[in-house]
Image (cartoon, rainbow, N blue to C red; front, side, top):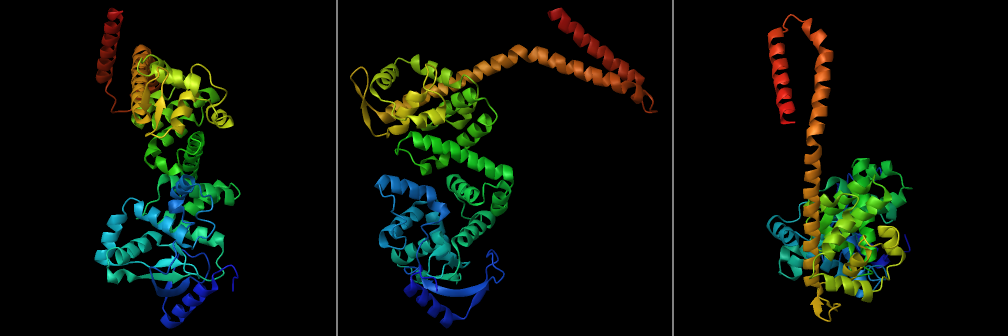
Length: 438
């Protein structure tokens, strides 16, 4: 027997298996023998997995908020860790719908538990059943049906099984993009940074898992800037912004990447829609945003306060995220301020007045949006400026291709010379109109 396991719980499960004798196939299990014992366990007895990747970002936020690095690791099966994990599961989107479905149809597929009754798969369903039983006094939800893994199952086998069951095969209970990316990062490090092996584990193409990983690296930097104020789970709704940012800066020079990253980070923190932020995918993005901020008299007291009263204690974190030390046109100081302030905080501005951070967020977000709109107009003007020349170049290329194909086309019986001459005449007429406008 594995001495690390809780032997009292293991023996309880052994007794249940002996009395049941039922077995069922777990196709996702990595071992050759995939038939496992099937037992009914009380939902108050099974333990929720604190290693569940579906809740990793939320756990990170809980740890930071409570200042308890060992909250989920000191005693994973203890009451404090289990209560915190249950709160996280109950707060996730779709939990009430899951409860309603379980009340109506019951448990359709077995959960999967370790030899000591820790759930590898079926955590949300078990939490919903527990809520139905304890909170709603729904007696049929007292038990959860579980497949039981061998006592010698390793941690790598458990992670692989979770990946197979939750990510690769079962899309009914979607991971957030942040939690999926955190799992990819863990697999990447475990699989000796071999993308082919990670992609195989996730049943996805290499470009897709790499894109998730790269998005997470950008999010790591923004969270680090906040110095504990922001958490990974806070950005579940901002996937599109991180996706577009990552895609744009992937092949860009460092200076442009830093400029666009700063604009995107500030826009994301102040609630600017990612569809607007995409107009700031240009080398001077940060300069455009700062120019708009400095031209707004209502924001001037904030900028003055940031410049003179808010120390930049981000140090290497800011340098890593945005490049070299702050210059006049970058956004390092403003970004650091908003990353570290909570919306309900009150700050004193340079003019001596107090302001709620949420109001400042609205003002700065509006300015970033205006800068994005102006960038869009600049882009349209630039396109209009070169449109005639680019269209003429394209037309010249097409005429050249037509001339090259003419001799062979005339060799076919179906060739219509009259139609050809009509089109040439029409083309000459358009060229004459163009010359007349000159």
